Image (cartoon, rainbow, N blue to C red; front, side, top):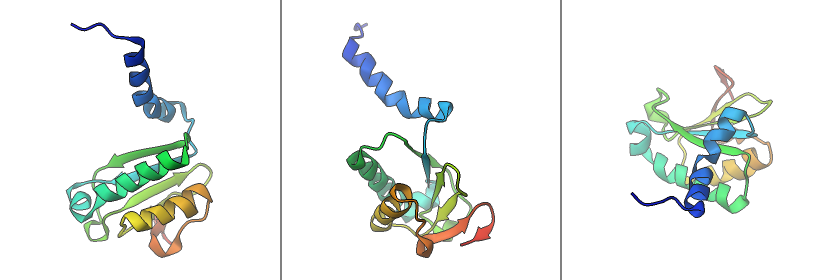
Length: 127
């Protein structure tokens, strides 16, 4: 068995950083990409990749990007839910990478939900 080096441990630490932040509550925003089979078939992977790219480019360390299964509205996929601390969650629908980029810029970075892509705000309220 190969010995672990300090560099290996640092890589492991970085890969688990988001998980630890989630448990400790050190995030400002949580983005959930709904990736059931319907979401994936509708294009959720490119949407997820756009958020990964946007987070990396911005250098943000207070954003958690995660995935979940189907949200139950297959005809509205790809969908995401954005949860900003202190605000009601917003569920967005029928997304593509361009729309995801706009949501990242306007909602996640500047705090302004993008009403034209929103399905709901909070639990049941239509935007």
